[in-house]
Image (cartoon, rainbow, N blue to C red; front, side, top):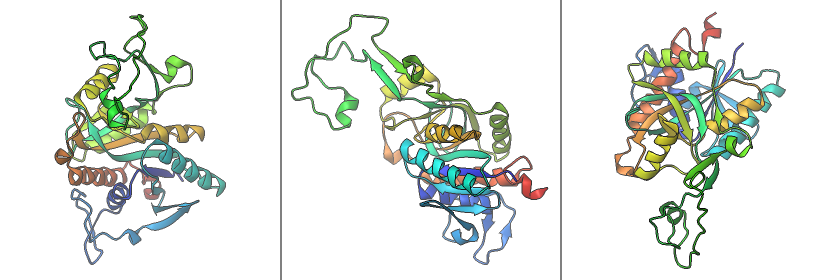
Length: 301
C-alpha cells in the first residue's frame, strides 16, 4: 500500500491538515460531504484519527496518510522527517511519498492571501555565501539593515574591504556555485501536475513555481525584490527544502504545498490572515483525500 507522510511545522498546521483528512464533522460526529472550507473548529476531535508513534514524535494517521508536526525551520523539519522515515522503514511499512505542507508568504503577482502554492522547485534561497553585497552608497562601518535586525550593532563596526571586482560584487553564491551540492530539489513533474489538478478543483487559485525555503523570513521590500529578481518564486516558507533533503536520502518522492497567509515584503503582522491560510490548508488536505487521484486511492481499490 502507498503511504504518505505529511510534514508541517506547527500543530495548528497539522490540525488543519488532519481536519481536512477527516472531512467535515458535527458534534454528533456525523460525516458531511461538504468541502472543508472553514478554519479548524472546536467541534473537531483529533482522536478521530489514529495516534502514530514515530520515535520521539507523535503523528496522526488516517489509513495510509500520517501527519507530523516536526517543528519550525529547516533543522527541525529535516530531523522529524528523517526519524519518521527511519521508523517506518524499520517497521517494514515505509512511506512512499512525503509532502511538506503549511502556511507561507506569497510573492506579489503570483499568490494572494488564501491561495495555494505548489512547488515546482524547492529552493534553499539563503543557503550559500554572500559575495560583495555591501551597498557602496552606505558609509563604511555602517551595519546592514538585516544584520541590525539579527542583533548586531553599528557601534564600532569595522570598515569592510571592497573587492573592486564587478563580476563578483553584489552576487549571491548558491551551493551549486560553491561546489557544495545543490540548493534546489525538483519534484517529479507528474506529482506536481497531479497536485495542481487536485487542488485546482477546490475553487482556490493555485500557483505553481519555485517555493523558497528561508532561515529568516523576508521582512523588507528590498529583500523581496532581490529574491524575485534572482529566483522568480511564487511563495516562501521555512521547511520545504529540508523536508526534501531528508526524503531524498531515503529515495522517497517529495512535494510541497503552501497556503498563503501574507504577502512577502515589509513585515506587517497585522495584515496576515492566518485563519484564511489555515482554512485553505484544510481545504487542500480535504481535496487530496477526496479526489480519485488523491492520497487515499489505495483504500478505494
